[in-house]
Length: 345
Ligand code: SF4
Image (tube, rainbow, N blue to C red; front, top):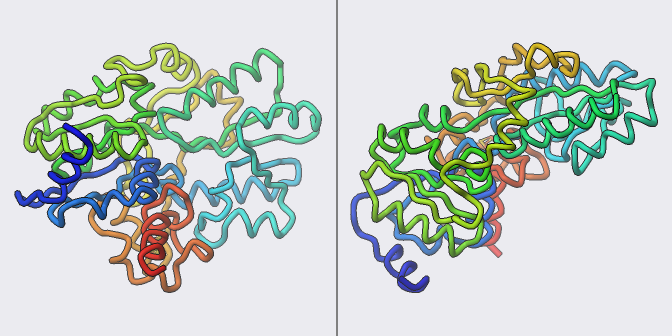
């Protein structure tokens, strides 16, 4: 089928309403940027899922980073997004303005030369992410061991996807699976779940045409518990065993708390006992305090759209975010806000 035929078919779809979740924040951003929603029938509802690492990080984690930053011997290293995520009372940006040494890095590996130069400091990386990012942190620890760098730590909030998808379960009619996560985990991981839920799971890249093909496949495969891979150039059934082995060496599964979804058994990755010397205190960060009126919890699990939140576009905007979903470029509210602005202009 040509792309034009796929678009026509999706636009003219008149079957039962379908709620399809793009699990991954990168898909949320790609769908918003490309305007894919405007090409779909009003009966096909794309909803954003819990695959934005910043959005699902609980406030206790931000609070812990701020607490660590108060020790003048610590340097907190992070990707840019996390700086503006609200903790229970303030964010990292405010702590930095008050004098904390918080540095934004493009890669965790950028921390290595800094740690080697400033040996009197402890460098702590805010290690958030999913299956795709975990091998990077494993690589970092491996290099730290090789180079005998002892003044680096991780504060981990690493999560894995299958169990959170299982938790959301049949509230969706299909799941768009993230290409990069499946590159590591393999799409075979999702086959038992698709079968159990009797709904289609489809892997796609982040190219708009590929996403449209995947949406079309989910519509055509309604109620069929199967997985389809539309990204065969990068994704296989078994994934990348070497990357998983590297992760398994340093990390083990444990329960994790997700913003909006609570604790999910075995959905987190924590440093193994023999590597806790690298840990900055990642266990037990479960408290979560949403800003009054913020509906992130419902947005993250697809129960509500961003526009349903009373703060959306009013007191909560990308320049003044009240919840994590408005901070990250992968967040549902951030992308919803920019889509609305595009319509107005
Ligand atoms: Fe939270 Fe802002 Fe999104 Fe509302 S619009 S759910 S306050 S992030």
